[in-house]
Image (cartoon, rainbow, N blue to C red; front, side, top):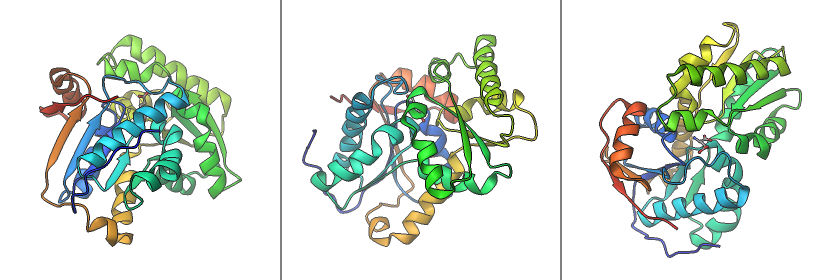
Length: 282
Ligand code: DGL
C-alpha cells in the first residue's frame, strides 16, 4: 500500500482525475456549474487506457494519482473516470483514506449517474456502454440494484472507443464501424432499452456519432451535468469540506505524458489551447 505524507494546507483546489482526457468532459461541466472554485486536473495520459487493465493495476495507478492531488493541497478529489471509480474508489475510501487523512474525500462518477438514470427510464430497461473494466466490475448493476431491483441493465463493453478517441481517430469511418457494431450488439441484447448510459467519460466526445446509430426514442445520458449537479449538492450538504476548497476561479492541468501531446489532444476535448505541467508518478 502506498502511504505518503500529504500536504495539509488549510484550503486547496478540487482535484479532478482521469486516466486520460475523458475527465475533461466532466471538468468542463463542473466548472460551468461551480466557476468560483479552484481546480487541478490530472490526466494519467502516459498509462491510459485503464479500461483493459486489471483491478490491482487500476487501483495502484488511481491511488498514486489521488495521493499526488492530496500532496498538491486538494481536500476533495473527484475520480472523473468510470473505470477507476469501479475498480479503485471503494478501496481508497475504505482502506486508504483512514490512513492517509480521514478528513479528505474522494468521490466517483457511478453513483450520481445511477441515481439520475433510474428516474429516467420508463421501460425499466437500461443499456450501458462502457470500458471492459467497468463492465467486468459489475459496479453499474450493483449500484442500480441498490436503488431499484426492477430495473434490468444490459451492458456492452466498447474496448476500441477510448483508444480511438485518445489517438484522435474518432472521426473516421473505422471509428464509425466500431461505434455502430457495439451499439447494435447492445440493442440486440435487449430490445426494451429506452435509456443508454455513456458509462465512460470519454464518450461525450463521440455523442453525435453514438446518437446517429441509436433510434430517436432512446435517450442518451452523459455524465458531466449529473456529476456537476451532484458535486454542487455535496458541497452544500458538507460545509466542512466546502470551507477547505479555495475559490479563485483558477485551473491547472497536470499530465504524466509530454505537455506538447497533452496540449494537442486536450484541445479536442475543450476547444481551447491547454498549457499543462508534466509530473512523474510511480
Ligand atoms: N474515461 C475513462 C472511463 O470513464 C476511460 C477509461 C480508460 O482509460 O480506458 O472509464
